Length: 336
Length: 234
Image (cartoon, each protein chain N blue to C red):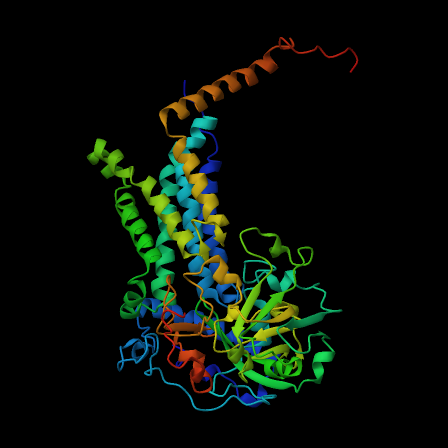
């Protein structure tokens, strides 16, 4: 269906967040009309069939070489660009700041935008410690000394929706190189601010607050792993995890922890929030993988916010060439 | 003596409660009020509303036991059918809007997903109830009609299980997004418990006692035994 809607797109030179927002409104209206006709005609054959066909035998379970993967590396300076390296159009600033999972504020996806409005992001400090030679506490200003990058990443939510987002920030590897992990350090653990007065969701006893996430050290050192402090050339909006959040684009969105106050290097695999809640559904790795379903739904396709029909999900969210070597020989079915 | 028929406000309220959300969804779809992911929004909210109506259908009889309000039992069929309407809308959004009536993809999605089979089971239990909701079947099936419609009890429980299992979290350890499904499940158990004869008799007995006491007060100026008379001038 999105192919039929191509004519609604405007020239890339005209795109600004505000324009995008306005065109999206028109898009949604047209989309509504087309979907209504799709209802009658039952014509919606999504372009996903080839992704679901069983392909060549896979050497290790959970791997599939069938899914097309790009070879274009992600550029460091994407300022002014309107598409990612695969040609996917950016989502609008309004899309990105009105809809997400931020359970610290609310379990409803449209509520954090409002509830986070008065969140206090200054003063803020990020404590970096654990198995490092130079433990250090950084203010947000201190972190500006690391080389700033503009990266356009696809964000694939575990719930099978996705967005294309222009982040600004710096590589986590730059920070880790400064604090110097010890030889015994194997993992990096992240912790979100715990403040029930500001983050009402943290008062919900159904969840193991505060939010925690973790990466293997080699994943943390990968160049695509960034700490974002901005989005769309503006300071990071509160709803998206201000003042500083992790972005790991080849993993499901929940790995990209928001409002970080602590980074700790450890020699054991850190506990993570969703793994603690439901270990059979949310593994430590949580790499985007169309071949390994969530126990309760398929991960083969996703809905890009702003589009109507589903699109195939790419292996490692399309970052196959850059990250696949991290997992050589690993059974991705058991290490989900 | 012919009693004057009271204004059917409950009947109107039931119809409004069913149709107003749909008016909002249609308007909201075109006015961008249904989040930036309107299909997922509609899919989930239709399912939740179906649960609300299913539980409401189970609540009619206990509410009648509790209040004795005569207009209640006559609304049960409409409430049940509106539940089924939202079940159908939930399915239509799932198959149509979400998967574009792509049966191959939908089948490969459903296969091996327990919560979807639980949902399928709920629908299979509800279909015969909706089909036999006409007066014709009530007359024709006589006793068997009641036997068949007993299926609504497992159908509601299975529907809520589908809801709970579809959430991120664990329904059985109550971790994650399970507070709401758990609430509806517990409410359903209370409503089912009120159908146990002993409980029902106790509830309606208590109600009669309460109603009698309530009616006695305005008829008599005398103070109930055991209570202090009000001091003069107060």
